[in-house]
Image (cartoon, rainbow, N blue to C red):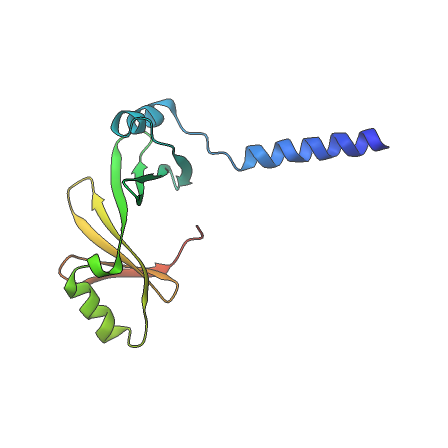
Length: 141
């Protein structure tokens, strides 16, 4: 009976370990390693794409790659005070009494820049000019 329990526990542990892993194609891993050599990375699946989360120069960052290993967007954590004044003014006017918990700068592969502000548990996207793009419930980190 002890042996059966031990086998069951080991099997469960191995299954749980495999479930938490993301299988990332070699070309995607190589693209990341080429751009960020020697960087410790945590991979997550984002729809059909792959998100590399890492820290660089004290900033939390992420890069989203498609299956062809093309970087689609880069996100870098910034201080709330680093958000454009237009974004902070929009939040003060339209989210009265709310505080921005976290902020990030997102750069699309096209060069387009957006800013993300976490407000009331939602990720809210803005243009650099302070125009609201969208607001959606924050994904679990």
